[in-house]
Amino acid sequence: MSRRLLTIAGTLLFLVCGASAQTPSPEAINAARKLVVTLKIADQYRALLPQLLLKLRPVVAQDRPEIERDYDVVTAPGSEIYAPYVASMIDQIAALYAASFTLDELRQVEAFYAGPVGRKFLEKSDALAQASAQISQDVSQKAADELKQRLIEALRQKGHKL
Image (cartoon, rainbow, N blue to C red; front, side):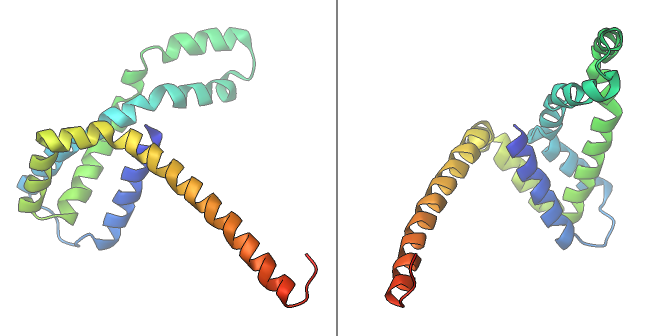
């Protein structure tokens, strides 16, 4: 899940560079908001809440059991704590998309992801990203090993002892 969120964040940063300086129309903002909902970006963000709360627990509780118990009680309704941040994130991403794409483009992208192939792509994208990363890592390791051997051999032919 976090790999997918990082991919989306990276895409957003890329889009910022090409974003138009014009203020998007309300219609474009609404189309972008619909796309953000279809992409389930807020759901991905909400899914990170338990991880965030677990990381904050030792920092806030400072290894004190009495604070840890109260921390768990206070953070139980986590979605309420997170709601303003999720809303802000949705607004900002929708504005970014609306500034980066025309209204027609937003509608086309949303139509793709709302359709069967787009939904399938979204469902499989996490697994595909993980598998792709593993393939990339495996190929890179193989290439590094082979290049190392070639370089060592070339240097030996030049008289170096390795």
